[in-house]
Length: 208
Image (cartoon, rainbow, N blue to C red; front, side, top):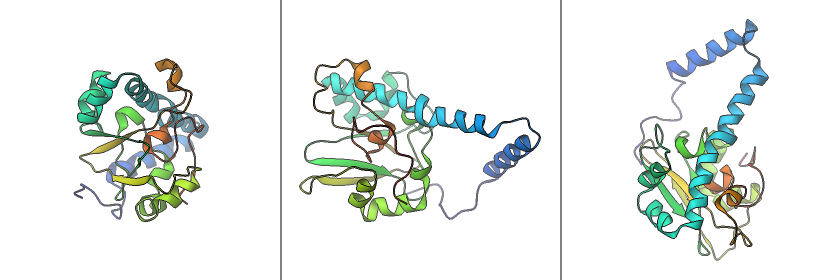
């Protein structure tokens, strides 16, 4: 697949400048590292994924919206007001009784920012990027996700041009829930495909 950068490249000048500035601010006592970590956590685990949760919950409850989401993810996501860098082309893939989807970026960490926020550390790690393609079922098991042998596992490789969003299967017993209630069952990791909806909080490790 085409990509605009390679994971073996050294950090860009912008990344180096940001890291240098961060180190300087911490050294001068102008920034508290714990506060900075908290802010990053907010964008990584709370603010961004809330957008994706709204998209998935609506898809679960509105068949017409789900059809539009599967046909043109970018346009359907924009209907809810979510767009911007990293979301120019979003493709939605649906988990079913026959297929389980998971997402990786084998060259770096391309990720659908408008719906999932910042990519988690493990998503950017070399082991996950390599093993998700080579042995996806083992990687899923490390996240506590056990997929039956008769269910196909499909791995989607994100690129700078195309980012993927997994529509997880709604958990049993969620049929009568409102969209707001359904959001509580959807995690960032379930929209990447490494966990099932309703399986708990996002994983901080895996694929090591």
